[in-house]
Image (cartoon, rainbow, N blue to C red; front, side, top):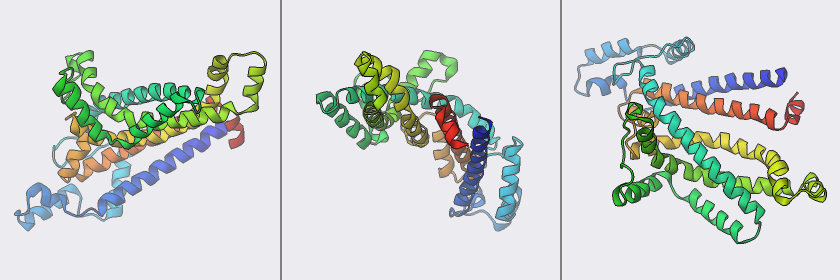
Length: 316
């Protein structure tokens, strides 16, 4: 187990380092000068030069990268160009919104996907299977921003069950806060649930053809007991893989959905920072999102070892 864990940790930190380099290089090639954006195009050249020096933009790119990575490793965050406060303060205020939103979306998507996927596999080539696959195909095709607008139109404008946007804050109470996240989480979860349902169905069908399933049935175990006690444990391995990979799309979707619902989360912060040419905020937040995705995939690798211990042996 120690060798398995050591290999995964090496891959984890190497991937994080490569991600930081790619994020930095991608932002370096963006057109425009933050100093011009902050001071305006009519600002005198002397003021722009002074501000560039104050922001450290007069140093070579490699030096700025090393300073950035070293500061992050020490827990130091730069100040936002636009807001003038520490980026960590901005991120911390919004993480308490985006993380619950992402978790709610993942829980909703997983519950729907596992139920529909297993139901479709248990009714293979029947009406229930065709219906689930048709619904999942529709769910994949529908953009989450369009679905978000439809949810607002139906449940906020027509029925009045929810507000059309905004977030009251956790200090307003758990129910008002969670209620404000229900529609955004459904908009985010729909595509993920559709994808997971199809993979769950395929994985369950593949495992159901294995010899040990026929053996369990031959011993007198019921179809339902065989499905949930033996098939699901083995079928979950590829499903968990897809869940980890799709978590990146879930975080990317928050940028659009939070903007549609006017929720002050991480996604909306990135959207506003891009518009304000606040490179340091975009850089740190994008790396944070990448780190979350890498961490989730690391956790998925650890779950592999729990679900199927044979993977640890094969990896040694």
